[in-house]
Amino acid sequence: MAQGILAGLTVIDLTQNVAGPFCSQALGDLGATIIKVERPGAGDDTRAWSPPSVGRHSSTFLALNRNKSSICIDVDTVEGQRLLGELAATADIFLHSMKPGSAERRGLGWEDLRKINPKLVYAAISAFGSAGPLSSLPGYDPLMQAFTGVMSTTGNEGEDPVRVGVSLIDMGTGMWAAIGILSSLLARVQTGEGANVEASLLDTGVGWMSVFVSNFGASGQVPKKMGSAMAMTVPYELFSAADGSVFIAAGNDRLFAKVCKGLGAPALSEDARFRTNPDRVHHRQELHAELTKLVSSKSVADVVEALRDAGAPCSEMNTVDKMLEHPQIAAAGIVKPLPVADHADHRVVALPVKIDGARGARFEQPPELGADTDSILAALGYDPEQVAALRASGAIA
Image (tube, rainbow, N blue to C red):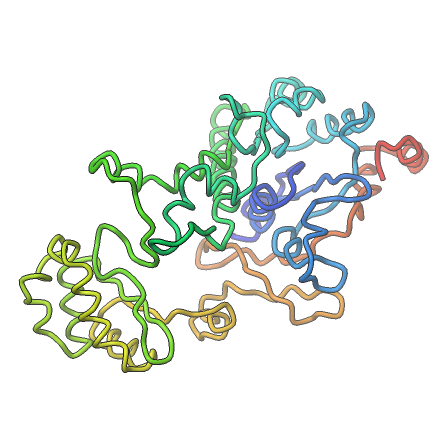
């Protein structure tokens, strides 16, 4: 079911970089047909995001563009815009990441396309959204981490803020767009009409700050950088062991008692300074020092084993290679092979959700630039001579 749940649906995808391609890849993993529209000659920016690369492909492009076909259309030509209108007329979803107003100037806005396809679900991804003084500006993940305050909360106290390593705003925006699209498809079953979906990096960044916004409203205190720790509960952070680091998470008093038991110091949970979570938050530094004494001389493996035996939440601090080697990852089945030329062992991350116990099983290689231009146009009714004429005009490549 996971593989074919969206089978029969067609997505015209004019996005590039991370957010939009992450969205359309999720839809493709679930069975939708994804027609990726790319710039003649260059294509998606991530095709050139290398090194590292795998054969001819940027590894970033490989991570975000499986299960798609590629057509090269120049959206700045009249013929190219007409072709996109024809594609939209036959599609279920039209997804783009042009700046607000850009699609409209090309006759590809929501109001334009709904006239030719009232059932179309139209989805636009932008940096700052479609309204406001900054709406016309471009944006990227780290820029939005800075603007929305995410970066201000990331890093160690007394040091410069740092970017969250993963592109959580880009990928989060792709997720929100996919949720909006799927919700609109469900509504279409009832109404017979499409919808206009908007997702922005700004909204995603502010959304990830929900708890910080609420805490600021309650306390009036601007959130600070706390390294791996969290302001509201203690212990909830990394501790240094003899050969690495262990994250210990005690979200309530009962779990804190299990932490103390696992570390061989059950009496610590009865210390008046640490008896309740508010006590522990107030005496954060003292507790950190006490737990560090208990952890620092032991190996990571010994600490993790002891804590897990006691039922206390914890984890070794893995690097990517160690994470991929862990048997839990194999059991999860979330990392899958995506063989490409000369790299039969290349792996990518599957859709992070299961439906009826299964993940999407489609793992077709990302397309070569423009590889499907002729076949997509043939499906629209264009004969080889017409395709050749379009190519000669520069509308396609």
